[in-house]
Length: 385
Image (cartoon, rainbow, N blue to C red; front, side):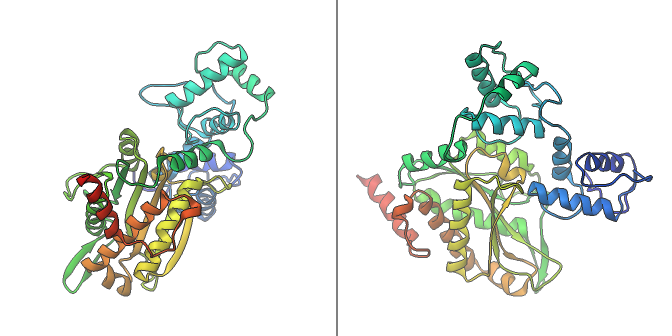
């Protein structure tokens, strides 16, 4: 969809404003179909609260978040709908409540899928209700009567951490999905340097290919979300579905950044988290390792780790990060990014971060100390044995 922005008018703007008014982020005005400065401010506030990119415009992802936000738990009956599942803030609230009661719904992603329906069915059986997997008034009443069962941390993150501890430190046999950002008709950031056109999509794919080779040599099963061709591209939800379908252990999305200010530079890494403090602790650890390894090994400015609720991070069922490796619009960063040797450094930093994810915290090693070539040697020795 075309982003709806300041000075736009029409029914779509009226609907956006209606949702923002109901969320108490915007005061009603006589002209309810004009995207004015106050509407832009309210959209920015909503994006910040939901962990989205803050640009004051309503693109596809912000619109889906607004549409989901209109529902409160109890407003409607919830059930597993195929092929289009119910999506909304009420679904996310239900999932959070089920998690606190000890049921394994996976990540609270706001999508009423089969896993959520099975957890509701299990709860209904335990309290003597008709076990149909739908959440109506009787099921809601029963949930309100019961308190949380699980204490000592968020259950889903505890499960993720346990799974990593139990899987062992070896990378052999583990599955990772690498997502080169953009592609197809969307080149991302584009800039001309010395008569040569450089695009974010091209650099992201080159970096992904270098990372793929190194992780495959270390024994991992590696999937890429796209190839180098420029004819088609998957949406972010489709990329996450691919990762879920192959039951990946990790997901890394690769981008480079751009900004109107040519002085903007550095590397930043993002993990799943919302504006109200909900975060994936395992995803946050992966983001921290990726960020530190790249900053130390390349010398890029450390722009820190940040929590976001982008669909790319929210809808994946495994620890997922997005890393923006430098600014193509910054001459210093661009000079590095266009060098193959620099992209090799970034790939090696990512391999080191992935390996450290599987080390127990108490046996972790200093940043920059892993020689990724030894990982290949270990795998080769194992294969020969």
